[in-house]
Image (cartoon, rainbow, N blue to C red; front, side, top):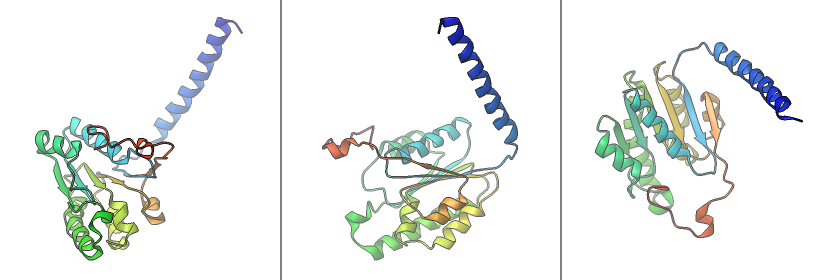
Length: 202
């Protein structure tokens, strides 16, 4: 096949693709906030959520971030938001990972306290974006009542978007979210004995 035929074939393929994309854009007429679940075994769920935080801040929208589980070790996201984005309402459960605490009762109390911060954000229409980082674990471990969490996600203000991250979380959570993305673990440096890297992993 000569270059001219290749170019013509490519052009026709791109025209068809553009028509499909344009049709999809035209069909998306509903204007409202979205619920996004980032789940799966792979790396990058929280990183993706914080990318959306930066995106929202670029438009000067109000953002709330609540981190469940994390908190004992500083992360680059926390450092940056606290130093450069005081307008972001940022809260951490602060207990660290459940396998470190090994105290179910204390973890449940910490989860309830953290949910008491997160839930009002989901009721406040001034928030354009709310990130609930690692919330899925609170459902998987039965630290929080699933009915309460699902209801709060479903009944949030219409213009508010919410991002939930973490492995698992259950079928009901997936059902109520508009977008569900699974991050697949194909290969991870940690499994090869490579230590977590500051500025990349935390």
